[in-house]
Image 1 (cartoon, rainbow, N blue to C red):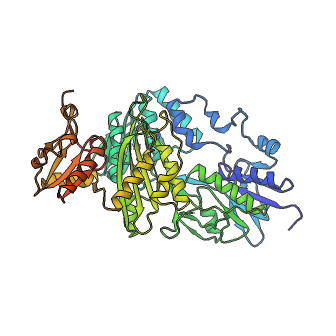
Image 2: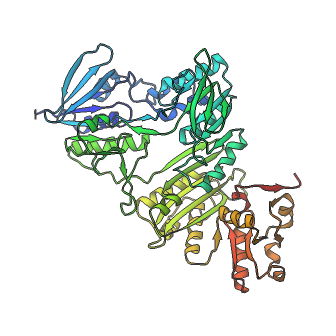
Length: 567
């Protein structure tokens, strides 16, 4: 090894530039070179849908610094102190001789670059489904600034009107909103029977889907795309599923990301769905590191899950810092991820951290779950907005396992608190006790995330006997339950459950009119958000009713049909 440490970084979008920049701060004398096969380096791909939507008008904003400096090879050389080779593809790693064979994509010239430490930041690629028609004109995969700029240009120049969004994940939802706001008709096609499969449980997804439908998105769920159809001009004309053909003059495909780990695999490095790394970012070869979308991550609680593949720019940047610190001799091990993700869905915030209920079931975890609904601020504040929180905790130690949010309220703030609690191994009671910021413009005196934790704690203790909307709907479909509506008469005149076995007794009158509630039937109580529904359950339990539960979240969280009256 020469006296000057030679560090070679393959990949120049997120993890790569972060690693190289951090390393030069810690080791100014290190010889650092970054190799990138594209002509662009260090761009914010997560901003692409918002460019298409019109949130900003210059696509170069994604490749510039906050003060407008373009992040070019010269910028990194002059400002950060490391070399950047663009349009240069790494084709092979020679671990024995510690070299990487590269090819200049413009000239065809090939050479070997030596390293003492190698960093693989090769990212991920959009999955291209093996179906006919994906190479037709007016079909896009939204991963690069060129994709967003060409899509927007063609929408304007061709007057594109009928878009089909294939995939209902994060990018699918963001791009759907962008195209709706461009006055296009959008049909969203998803192979699963819900939006955001693998991210949300079906009940939370059903609630979020209402927002898409309210914004004129045509949802086609549970149908698999089998091909794209085109005209004589080579442009797409339709999307063919296993059940129908949907007219389209524009198609965006976002059906997942695959790690670019082939270079690592061919070099004999350990891989699963992505490159396996330790907490310092080292691969199975200690002189080769990897980070970003090409690696899998440990879940923070190793007792519940080993690895998760969650490609996010935030994680990639953390990896870059961890890798640079370890190379420089000041290790700061990466503790893992909680699978946190959030998306803006028109007026809704939708997201998750930790495990879903489906994941907990698959892992045979003994858990309890609750869904809370209510405003994110005191009801008297004009900017108060309703949202739901679904929360899971382990019965064994009451530790928080996962949280999902959906609605117009500020769910992102509550996700962050939940992610922190999971990260530090906190229990429900510990999360409820966190000294969160309070003032009416920001939250109620007891924050919704603390309230939800308290409700789940009560449910674990057998005090609160809640039932989810999906469970309640299944019982209603069987016709074996009686609904107890404890709202005030004026509320009842506006909206009712679409069910014929409903008793209406305001909560304040329940003790005096208890004989109207049958003792030989299962009772499901509810109100707007089911706070009164919960209290009604307690009142009836105290009077000897032992078959009473409240519908969690009330009718505001009900994702099924409601009868709107007096409107």
